[in-house]
Length: 367
View 1 (spheres, rainbow, N blue to C red):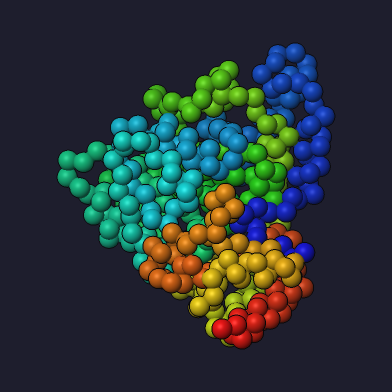
View 2: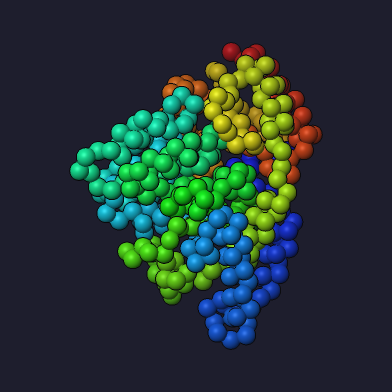
C-alpha cells in the first residue's frame, strides 16, 4: 500500500505510539487527588504546556477536545455569542455546519485561486450598525492546501473589532504559526493530522477574559469548566509527542510534490490552486472528463490511498464545495487530493506517478 492521504490522517509517529503506551499504563484519573490521579494530572499538564508553547499560546488557554471538529464547534458556540458570523466558502464542514442556529451568517467568497477576497471581507466587516463579527477562515485548506493571506486578514479583523477564529488543523506542524504572535483570537488543531493518535485536539484562545464562555457540555467541570468529560490522556500525550516531533523534524515536501505535479500536468491534469501559496505536502489534481470516484477506485485497486474532497463526509464522494467556490465548474467533481505524509518516500511518489499514468491511459481508451 502507498499511503498518500495525510490530510485525512497521518500515519502514527513511533514517538507518539510510545508516549501513548506509557500514558495508558497510568491508572489514575487526572481529576483525582490521590497519588495515581496526580501522576495522570502531571502528564496531562505537561502535554498542555508542550502544545500551548509550541503554538504560541498560554497553557491556561489550551482546552483539550476530541479533535478538530469539536474544537471548531466549541469556538463558534462559546466565543461567538452576540456576534454575526462571516464564514469563508471554502471552510471545512466542521466550521460550516457549526454556526449556531439562528445566528446571522454571511458567506465570504474566494478568488479563482481559493484565497479569500480581502475587498469583500472588508466590505462585510465595515457594514454600519452591524453586530460585531466572528470571522472563520482556515489557515490552510484541507483539499487544495491553499493558504489564506493571514496577515492581511488579521489586520482587517483587528481594525474592525472582529474575532478571528482560525481552523489550523492542516497547518499545525507543517507551517510556522503562533496564536499570540500572529494575533489570532482562537485556533483549532487536531493530533491525528500530524502523526498523533485520533481522539485528541485542542482549542487555543487568546485570553481568559471570556466571561460568557459556554461549553458544549459541562460534565464534571474539567478544563476549567470549559469542556466536560474525562480527558483522553493517552491520545493527548500522543498528540504532544507528535507535535514536538513534527516541529523538530520538518519534512521538505516541495521537491516531491513538484515532481508529482509535473508528471500529472504532463498527463493533462489541472493543479487546483497552484497559483496561490500552498502547503508543501498537498496537491489537488483535476483530470478533465474523469469522475473523482472512478479515479479513486482505480487507484485503490492498485494500492494507492488518496482522497477526493474531505475525508470527513461519512465516506461519501461528492462534488467539492471548495472547488465549486473557486469557480472550477465540472472540474469540482473530477479532482482527487494527494497529500504527502511525514514518512513519504521517493518510491511512494514514483509509484503514484506510474499508477496515475496507467489510470490516464485507461481513461483515454474508455468511451
